[in-house]
Amino acid sequence: MNATARITLAALLCVGLAACAKKQEVKAPPPESGPPVSTETTTTAGAYTPADLDTDACLRQRVIYFDFDKDVIKPEFQQIIACHAKYLRDRPMARMTLEGNTDERGTREYNLGLGERRGNAVMSALEADGGQASQMNVVSYGEERPVCREHNEDCWSKNRRVEIVYTAK
Image (tube, rainbow, N blue to C red):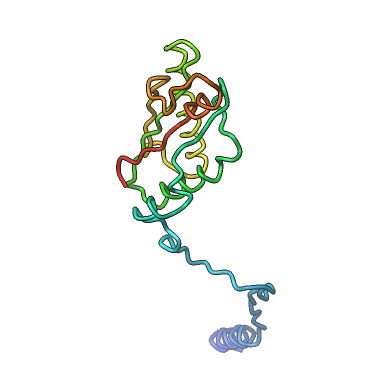
């Protein structure tokens, strides 16, 4: 056989073998049973609006109370924290001031520090739930802004608080 015939025969064999090669299909795994899972993310579904600050029962609660001489948030206020954190996530332009307050017991300096620690505790909880630090400001009034002026435990417990005040909705 001459060289041209050999090359032509070799080329035909290669093409023939390639054409006969079995192609493997890559199949997607079968879908799992259960409800279909959407990959779309909807940011507006269920998002809070400024009107919700006055109408939503959770968002209307804007006071977090503390035990005597403590700056730890009580478990019963976690839902309020979660609602306000969601509002901050839904409304990136929203801003709030967290006003820390104490009862009249303790020195002025101690109470200012305690009010600040309480405000920072609420801020940390809001951040942990998705709020941004840039949306919050902490101010301590210590014992200077009581809501109750009697000298008993019931009254003092009302003064140990952080008030959430929205400065931009």
